[in-house]
Length: 287
Image 1 (tube, rainbow, N blue to C red):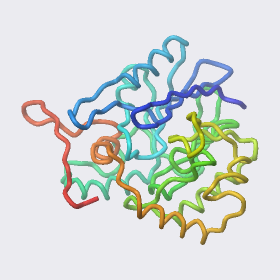
Image 2: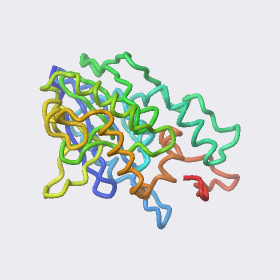
Image 3: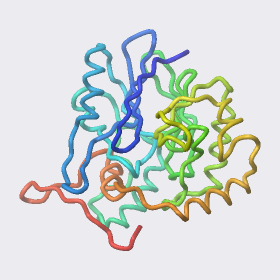
Image 4: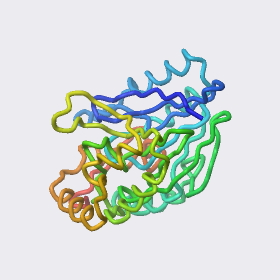
């Protein structure tokens, strides 16, 4: 089955969110939503999420799922805001518990922060399947960028999050806590084992050198032959050496500190203090 896919590009974070609809009905899912956040002022905004809400309501769609491919380090999730407006269950990979344990310590969250994934409505493991209307969603566990990364295979489309980028840009970094270039290579092979005609929708695009426009849709066949990091038969050893060397030169994402604290809570802010104010922590020399 060929789902109807509508992309929403967020200029501030180069994130692509997707509305995926059952072509035979009104049921839909939203994948990797964005809550706008200005770090310099500490203020949030819902412009990106509101565009998705307006689209879903205008089309008369029924939102059944709010899916996260992983705990994003470069943008805040708007899943709770969308849930309040549109309904739907928030889902993420079961390995979120590893991420919560790791970053619960980094941010000194204490025992009140639950590390069991209970902030989410559904935790997925390899081989799970759910439905968007009559459209089946199959779950692949594709770690490496983070321990909890998932790929959602929906009909002839695969939503890979940060695991793969467009062929001319390559693959995700693997230097976050719990990441592994060896593991990422194995995860990519699982995606590339899908039929060549499978459409791949990526989570970010930064315009590779020589390309003037943003892009987010490719195919398994194109990734196999053209991906600059893993295509054309590149070996695991070649990939690991390239990825680890490249990652050592990269700066941390500018929104990693607020993003992790919010996204490991399923998009919720940390608990407010007695005056109703919310604060985010900045760990010193921990990342």
